[in-house]
Length: 426
Image 1 (tube, rainbow, N blue to C red):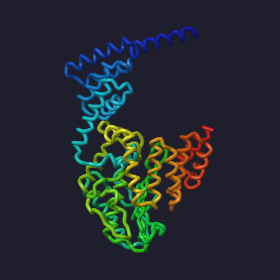
Image 2 (cartoon, helix red, strand yellow; image 1 turned 90 degrees about the vertical axis):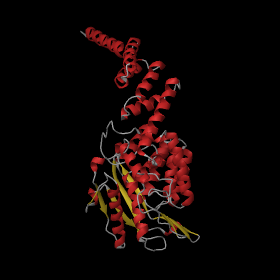
Image 3 (cartoon, rainbow, N blue to C red; image 1 turned 30 degrees about the vertical axis):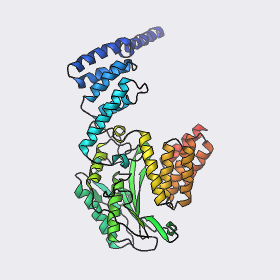
Image 4 (spheres, rainbow, N blue to C red; image 1 turned 180 degrees about the vertical axis):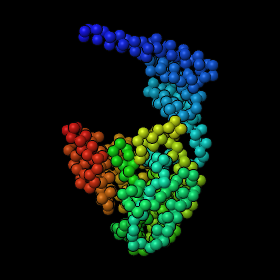
């Protein structure tokens, strides 16, 4: 009886091999695909080219025409992804070169359709963080505080401009913080940002809360109540800063390089030597970048299994991981030169070096960030990142030490999972 079962399994395996992984399968599917392709049916040929590629991934001729068929097909999410993956083939043969060229052309066509934008900088490293548009209107909670009433008026006006200037952004104010996706808070500023009679500081900052499985839980926008000299911020400062930070809460995590954009890097930063309020109107580049962001498939969002063939494939749009990381290192290096006493810049720069695989340098910047950390949120990020870096360096003792310190600040599921992984490594 057992012999018959084993024989049956063997027969099934042979059939599967012949149909899907044999030279016969590769040749049969290639011929079918090539015939369809030669008759102007590129999209119909894709399924057969894929089967041939699966049967024999080393067939450069099949890969070449597969890349050609992909480039002539409607640029759906799947088509973009497959063409990009072909372009990264380690063989670097003619098929890979063609796929790379066609992927570049497809990227250029997509970006040309959108127009001038800064999506490369708007991503968070290699991650696309944004809300599922089906979640709109986003619920906003604004904390009660003893700040001037015009703080609230200008924040609400800034929310309204994002709604009025876009076709899809919507907000709904709620009275319960637990119900909110965007939480707006107020806190006292730390006077230590002043040195030598000069104070460099941000008016506000935004931090995402990301749970396990890359779930975006909320965005927290924190305004300082005053500047370090205990002076209230003026209405234009609040309004301009609110516009900028709301962009972050929507997923524009990085910054524009042009001063006319709301998301310009220096938009929400001030100095006692003089304050520039920045723009008070969303630019076309801001709006186009947001549209592109929300047409790109996110890696971090607030719903599970967010898929659509109408999405853009993020690596095709924003480039390779190495390109993004280098750009981020340049951006954060400039930031800490301008604001050397803010922990955020060092945290981001340390994270960028960690993404690049330079854990030693990443740890150095995290240690510098620790000297300037003022909040539990900053300390949590420092300890969590240090734990990840030591984990990647196979130093389980240090990794567990910093994971425990992070857990002491915020005991969420991501920390519990990290500690479990570290203990398994030990």
